[in-house]
Length: 183
Image (cartoon, rainbow, N blue to C red; front, side, top):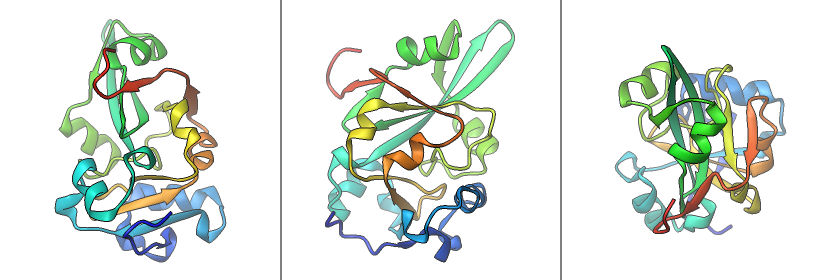
């Protein structure tokens, strides 16, 4: 891992974490070095620009998307974490996982309002506990992944096994397909 990032233990820099993310990391009780954080230029928080500037391979960058599914009058929320080289199958796999008739990406207002995180920095750590977190199985193939920190001005680096160990996490084969391929 030779990223162009200065990494420090995440809890050493609480100013680089959204409040719910900081609380979630503290609650995991992991070794200080298990989850690291790096300050970045918030203008470069979007995946392609971030990976290019900070020399992070797309295969080691993961995106968290929030999904809203509807069944009758109920709205069911979930998160999906997929590698940056892939896209989540929202209307196939995720719709079936949520057991809803229709699924779509959550609106910006819902994403930020319900999570306490900044748009473009959403991460599986610190989401509402009742929301399932679906991890594409391909994420677990990376030694380490770079994900959001809840704010646009930093990124987290951690082993995918930390994410798979979250209480709300479920690993799903085929959750995402390579970018450019039909879903």
